[in-house]
Amino acid sequence: MKYSELASAYEGMEKTSKRLEKTFIISQFLKKTKEEDIDKVTLLLQGRLFPLWDETKIGVSDRLVIKAIAAATGTPADKVEQEWKKIGDLGLVAEKLVQKKTQATLFSRELTVEKVFTNLRKLPNLEGGGSVDQKVKMIAELLSSAKPLEARYVIRTVLEDLRVGVGSGSMRDAIVWAFFGDKAKINYNAEEKSITPDNREEYNRLSDAVQHAFDLKADFGEVAKLIMKKGEKAFGELVLEPGNPINVMLYPKAKGLAEAFEVVGKPAAFEYKYDGFRMQLHKKPSGAVHIFTRRLDEVTKQFPEVVEYTKELVKAKEFILDAEAVGYEPKSGKYLPFQAISQRIKRKYDIGKIAKDYPVEVNVFDIIQFEGKSMLATPFIERRKLIEKIISQHPKKLILAKQIVTDSLKEAEAFYKEALKVGEEGVMAKSLRGAYQPGRRVGFGVKVKPVMESLDLVIVGAEWGTGKRSGWLTSFVLACRKADKFLEIGKVGTGFKELEEEGVSFDELTKKLKPLIIAEQGKEVKLKPSIIIEINYEEIQKSPTYESGYALRFPRFIRLREDKGLSDVSDLNLVEDLFRAQFRHK
Ligand code: AMP
Image 1 (spheres, rainbow, N blue to C red):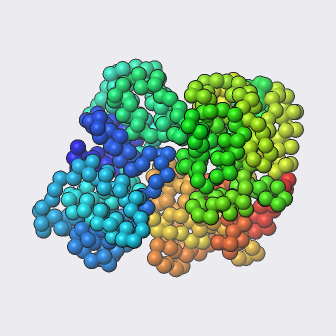
Image 2: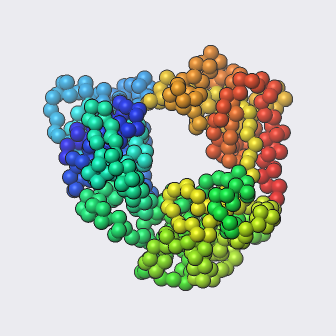
Image 3: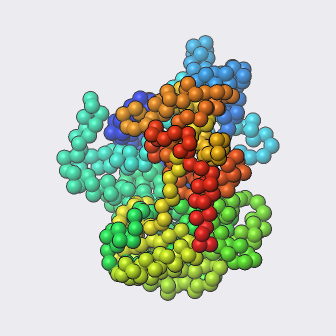
């Protein structure tokens, strides 16, 4: 298949902001793709070279891409860089410079999807001496055969920033439209680029089946290939295989315990909500153990002790367990908050030492596959019984999540208080009859935790955006107040809207902030404190990065507070109080 066809599909997707139209374009494209290309095309359409669960990163920097563009187009690197500063998107820079060059030479070989995919897939494997040059060569080779539009998307794919906005929902729908159009009696309207399924029920059933297949395989490429080969039969043959991570079940938030009961029914199971990180423990029939994070990255090498515990303490040949790993201080045994052990996840060297300094205790709370059989449809209470049976608990190594089953609000409250008192984040309430629903936030379980008070912070800096966001200020530096000074406490870039109609947009904020610019350096600007915004976050952390000494974890914009003045900006004392309140029970 020609890469130019894919490039025009990308362009079509990029031109529209309508989800339905994007989905339409993808589905049309999938329809005309041959079986041998379908897995590659599905990945590339999402701007990926590796499935979600594969931890391989392309790992190519902006600098390296600049060199490759320079080499392929005969443009000096500093000129490429200048263009980049102007345009803000190396994909568009490549397009422009390739355009110039092709006008001069007119010679180009046709790029295929296969060629682009294979060349780019080689990039992460190039390591050591001379690898930078090899990478430059590999990308430059593609660029020399690329037409301008192709160059745009080759470069964006390399940089893992496709900017055409395909979410997993669109991909799922596109697969249904492409392969089950007849069954769901789908009417394509090519002019309006939209669809309507006449058989809504059938459409929903198939859409659920495709979603479920994705939750199990975490790769639309594989799902599409299976469907192409076997049609609907593929769904019946999907097996949960240890070694292949799955999208774990997620839990929405309930406002309190009464609401939790409403969602999950009575009686319900309550468990401690541990403050660690999610781990899937897989054991293959061969005895090999694999560990994956919630984001499906493999971390087996980083946690050798967990591999040992799993082998030693779980009495079964084959399984997939769901668990939360919590760090503790080796000497005192005191549990540590997540951030203390987060460094272990990425660590590639001195693994033994860091494992000793920052050991983890694994709290198992669910089972997804057991001795080759899927446990997804088995009621939660049965799944719990099974893990109680097969796990020999060993404190500070591997244990079961602490649980009670009750229909009494009073008992649930006492358990919640106890959880907070021993320093846990809150509790999870789970339906006894609930299935294990990978990936989706449905009513089989909810979390209950104390809400952090929001903060009113003032914007004191920002960064000019690039690409689609160029011309706008994005990523805003926030500050709290100490007497009449403003001290930085973090940056926020989420919670704003791209478009005017939908709420507070980057454009609107940019207009408000532009007159307040005091200084500018590169992409960064300093702003006169004036605009106050309300911010939500998950946690306050100590941090040397910001002058306030604190940082916010997962800050999110809620609203503009034009009703507030500078003296209303949240005080550093409040931040300190809130920080301590997080640990009051520890
Ligand atoms: P949150 O990250 O706030 O959405 O809360 C959900 C997360 O809590 C899960 O993804 C798990 O990593 C973690 N967690 C801690 N304890 C439990 C438990 N007993 N059952 C399920 N998830 C838990």
